[in-house]
Image (cartoon, rainbow, N blue to C red; front, side, top):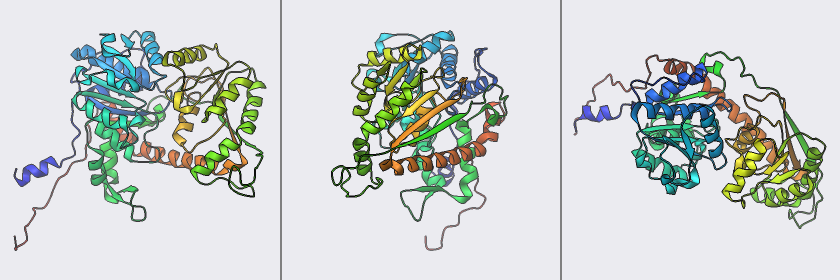
Length: 459
């Protein structure tokens, strides 16, 4: 390899593996959806970072359907546990041939849908396309599913990732998406565009001179937007109703030296102290949540973090049904279908079980009985209701004890950080993304050396 070849290898050019001619797409797609699906088909490997309620499921199914019509290749869609059945229903609604399966041999449909826990039951080399629904599963760079999905999808030519929350507080997840799509590994992304923060070596920040090129590169293989108007499309029908966030602080019965290890009342600070505070105040928080749910005849979803919270709430709330981790997959799906159909008034569950991917615009009341430090869980759980298609103003109630004030403040801080970063990502990429998906020439970051390297005399 000579020096010219070495330089060529350093060029940042996302691979084009997509369709040259995109088949006719469904007339039911909105203009922005149709253009996005067409762009993703032409790219072959892409990421859709679209806000909740913008039709990511329909776009994913349309992408997979177009792939099958153009190449005859089948696509597998991975979803969170509770979302696979919902995706199958949406496919039937739009006339797309797809089936939810647990094992590869269960169906020869052009599109098969399963959940991430069934990854062992499939040979991904037998598929031409793979879709990751709620692809924030790639968040952890050392996570089990992240590593397996990236490795096993290397053999799949067409790849699509979709999530509403791409790394609200951490650029690392963007690198994981890039690696999944076969664009660039996250380590190469960091070394190319980022430097270690001098004060916190575990944190990374964009190089000052690389910021523009980084966002150009991001826009070449991903599209970030929270509203159709971000990409220059008609925004009619996509204005959200008002979200009301109600904070309830309940009095706590302090037990000196027993629960908190202190003689006088004080807010929890460490993770261990917060967990003790939650366990010590279950009765007070559960009682408040039950009062709110029983005072209304409307539909509610109540989010818990502890099993004791969930069981007690289901016992004292009229018409409540508990969905727990101990339920079988079939039982979970049955409860979710019953709630989605309006046959269950109050669903009590955890954000980790069904806080992502579900479409519950028929409900506009939700209660958080306990908060943890995951902003993403709170965001995703709230967005099950506060999303496009919701006709009513949404009321989200947050119940915490006096001991948990630090948790509430932490969530507020992360929310502000997430909104700031998302606004930055959208503002940097919206013009580039709009040009890309509407068929303009794709911009890529390129390395164009202007001066010849001169070797020192001692070599």
